[in-house]
Image (tube, rainbow, N blue to C red; front, side):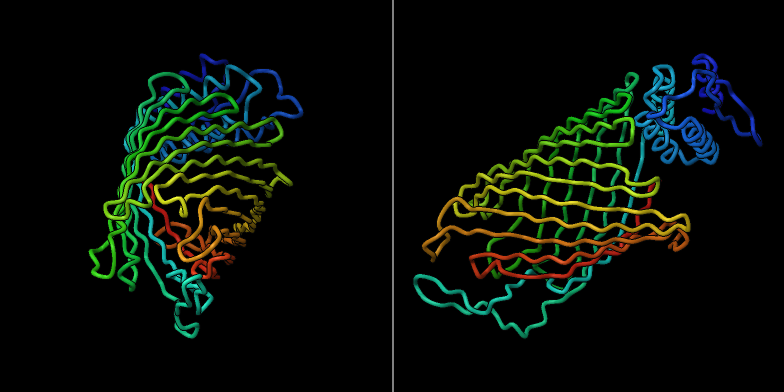
Length: 385
């Protein structure tokens, strides 16, 4: 693999150097423009990618060359070199696997209402006791495998199969999901386009207390990301999901979401991101169908000492299509979510860096059943091989 990348570098007028037994590349072309990626940054990433290849960490090398393709767009020859490196590395390791585990403590694991009485047109109903302990801890385990084939420079197809299990003390919250995703990706200098189709299934335990929430769904999605010269990034994604329930057919139907984000660096170590989205759900039961939108922003920072953190805020609104059962008006919800996450490269478990994320969620609804607050956290550990 190192020999192949070295030969390609020679053909693209990239001068190969040997430092400490590692093949790295110095650019023999004209200097980069003031707004393009700094040449020293690009060279440093190429050196690190070559070191990753020698160490057998193909996944990390792929991520570095992908980053270079998106951010170093000043030279057609260099862009083709990055694309060829991605093609060769994918051919070297077409199969990849991943596993993750997350501990999920929550102050309101069942999303119990903050209200105790549900006032309706036909009478009042007791929702629950506000003194009840609604907190709990869950565990989510996930495994996935992917096969990727690059059939031309910047063109690849992939198949991804994932399994996930959520374990809780409350039996109704336990579930297992399986998902198969087939995707086609176009990689261009400074841009990426992805078209995917998916099939997923959700399975819950058999309970005698109600109808089964088991379901399956087929999905279609298209997404694109563009990175401009100063590190500004624009992303857009459209997705459709048609879900069918085994017993709750009133929830069958199509959900469509359109999301967009704009991200910009505010310093060499920080980034500010704005996001927004629209969503519609056309379900068999019109009082569960809705139209909604969300707006938000996040800020992330990475310190030289290895500490990384992020803060975010999102507000969303959902208006439902028909009168809610027992009421004379349609349901309307608004949600406010504040998130925070932190990790440190020197804090590791089994050689991996865990990340702690927490959020506070307040859902305000004109239907008392859906008026609730919750504080949720996750401590996640990801393994890729």
